[in-house]
Amino acid sequence: MNNVVELFGLSTQKPSVDWMQVVKEQHCIYANKRCYKVRKSDPGISIGTCTVLYGKEPEPVIICPKRLIERGQIFTDCFHLLTTHEPGNELHIVSEVSIPGGSVDYFLVSARDGKVKDFVGIELQTLDTTGTVWPERQRLLKKLNVDRADDSEKSDKPYGMNWKMTAKTILVQMHHKVQTFEHVHKKLVLVIQDKLLTYMKKEFKFDHLKNPARIGDSMHLHAYSMNRVESKDFRLSMVSRLSTDADGIGICLGLQAEARIELEEIIAALQAKISPSTRFTPV
Image 1 (cartoon, rainbow, N blue to C red):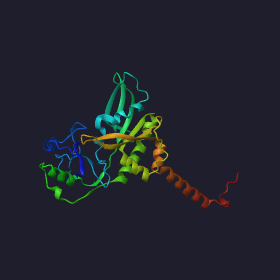
Image 2 (tube, rainbow, N blue to C red; image 1 turned 90 degrees about the vertical axis):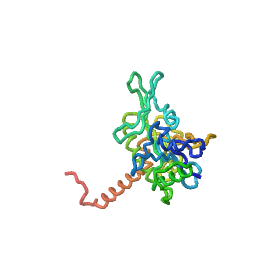
Image 3 (tube, one colour; image 1 turned 135 degrees about the vertical axis):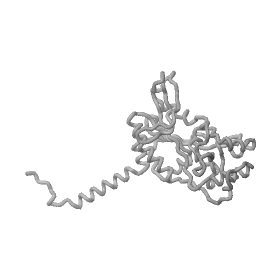
Image 4 (cartoon, one colour; image 1 turned 120 degrees about the horizontal axis):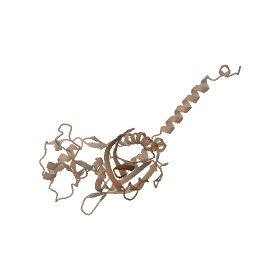
């Protein structure tokens, strides 16, 4: 079994693919341009790994955010959040926009006569890996009889999934960014794989999130699974929609709990110092 499940957007189980040509072109079928994931030691080589197997789970783990834009489904699933969109308006997908609090991956925009009438921010997050997937990629290419730039397939270096750092980092980022969206009364959506959501629910406080999602909330979380279809390809399928607001993301991160601890510390310090001599006596 191949640990690299998809390479340059194509299933590694499909026998009809001309892998020599695919690796030569380095074309990402989702971004419709060269794969942006390149080797640090050789920027001329795109790595191309979209999804991999990890652990005992049969469902692959997505490690490239571009994999999530398959068929544009994640954008379609955000149409309902354009609450002031009207028939006749044009829809646009705008990428990499800087806002107070950081950059947002995509904006779904409703516009008329070239003027923005409504928008939804869409942030993508997939699992970050530890170690390197490169040796697994090279082993796959050797199996497929594709010329390789090196013999890294001989390496025994493993790769892993950085669950904790990935989850906490994106929640902190969303906490900052959603405050900007709340100030302008717009919605921000985080798109992730269901595996990452399962981890987040286990490691962070998530029971206060609305399920199903409430359209009035500023922060939405859309989770997708990877399902195999008859062609041996995988297809994204939405499995969960949750919602909350900036305060809700703060609760996920335990920020309110930290504030309570700080309050208790201040109260304890004050109580240690109050005495008859500190009592205020009006003149």
